[in-house]
Length: 138
Image (cartoon, rainbow, N blue to C red; front, side, top):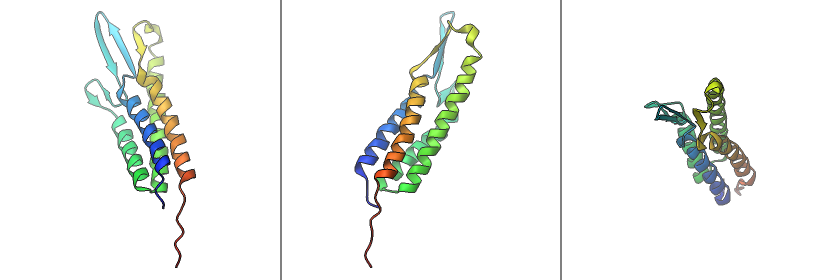
């Protein structure tokens, strides 16, 4: 495979959005002057399943930089599915708290997780479409 510099840059930008979506607070709760926030990677002092999506994102970047098309697409799609799954599960948890809407506030991670997931999907499709296989002459 020929290295795809532009495709790698697009994947890297999408990966930054994914990581920001995991690290920034997904939601925060303020009650009697005490506040608590949770992100997709860290909640209540416990690392959550977002660590797996972080590893998949790292592998996507790695394979894009070394020019491996198929693993880049596979791990990029796994990252996308994982982020959307985490978003759906955490959003359903937020919908259960509708009665406390004035106490619960959606954070930047809420929006960046979806934007990052969509950006990653588009980026790996772009990467796959623009990576050309080098023909060897025997």
